[in-house]
Length: 106
Image (cartoon, rainbow, N blue to C red; front, top):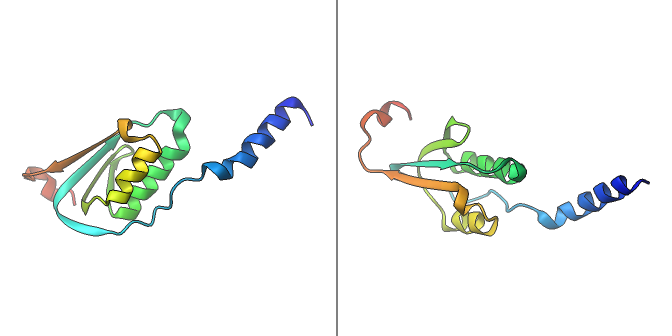
């Protein structure tokens, strides 16, 4: 096996240690719209994919790949997982007080 092959094998074996949190959060409908936007770097692709799947699981709808909308209460565990994954600096969460034209989206 080549040096490059050994390095790849090492990375694959250690991948299990870097498992992402489960996305089975308690789903609770809210009474206000929540907009979540994010800009996760390409080198963190696995985490970005995890984030999209978690948002889908929580009941958010994708407006664009990095813009999600829903009438959902955000679970504390989800926020804790974002912090643990060091994604907090890449994610913005907005709660909408007056809906205006957002009524037509969802």
